[in-house]
Each structure stands twice: as structure tokens, then as C-alpha cells.
Length: 209
Image 1 (cartoon, one colour):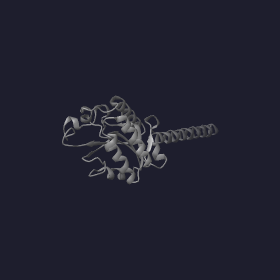
Image 2 (cartoon, helix red, strand yellow):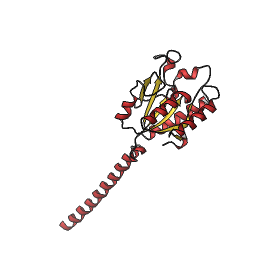
Image 3 (spheres, one colour):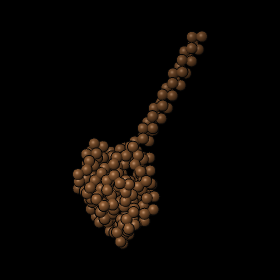
Image 4 (cartoon, helix red, strand yellow):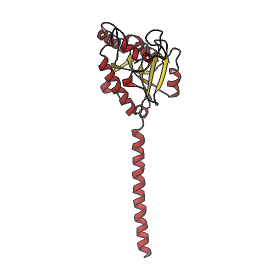
């Protein structure tokens, strides 16, 4: 009887060890899944969505490829959330079509931020001038930025250039920004080419994350 008990005890220990190792493996892969890919590689990223506000879409000159842009932005935001990548929205303010507190000032409904996202308000083309963005990036230990939004030849261009000056690794989502100026397609292409020469990395939304 004692021999049988010893055998049963050994079997139980073996089973418990197997269960323990299985739980460790499950926990490991769970943590791996919930860790942004960039963190594993030693870099922490964030997605910055610039000035995609209702008022811009009500101007006389429409945003170029408006529906395609919105669809692309929705797609990349969804990808970022799936990868647990921090998302920061900027919200511009002026005295004409983006007055603070008006409906036109708010982020477009289709890509509304969640409670986990950060909103940075600004009054200048630069996303850094008189804003809290730099402090946020430092606190979050962000080293590389993915940039998209409006407008190509304004705040998008300035955001990329300023971020390069601050030594961030900058990715511009080349099909994730637009403008409302005439010859928009040429402007977008020109901005992409110019920024690429300034060490901004162009990336397609399909290849993101």
C-alpha cells in the first residue's frame, strides 16, 4: 500500500510539473502578445493623428480623396490599438473654422479617440510649439513616431521636420495624409519626396506595424 502511495505521489508531482510549465508558457505568450512589437525590438512607438477635425471637411475646397483618407486612418488606428501602440491626436485651434469648443473643432466622428488615447491641443503648425507633446513623448519613452492626418503641406510637413530635429525616428504614412489645396495629388507627392530626403521614412498603411 505504501509503495502504491509513493507511485501515485510521483505521478501527481509529474502532472503538476507539466501543468506548471504549461501555465508558464501560456503566460509568456500572453505577455508577448500584449507587448508592442517595437518594445521587443528596443524601440517604443506611437501613432500621431494630426488635426483630423470636422471643420476641415466643411471647407469650400474639399479634402483630397476624403473618403479614402478616412478609411485609411480608421485602418491604421485599428492596427495600432491591436498592437497596443500609443495613439496621440492633435487638435488645432484657430479663430475661423476651428474655433475651440465648437462642433467643427472636434475630431472627426469616424476616428474618435478612446479613453486610452491622448489629445494634444495646439495653436501653431508645429505639434511641439506651446504644447505638452514633447513631455508626453519623454514620459512614455517614445523613440519613433508614425505620422498621419492633415494637412500635407502644413502641419504634417512641420510635424515630420520638427520631429527629425528632436532626433525621433519618423515614419510618414504616405497614403495617410492629404490636403485641400488645388493640385492636391501633386502637393502630396512633393511633400512625400521632400520629407524622404530629410530622413523621414515613407511607409504604406498596408505595411504598418
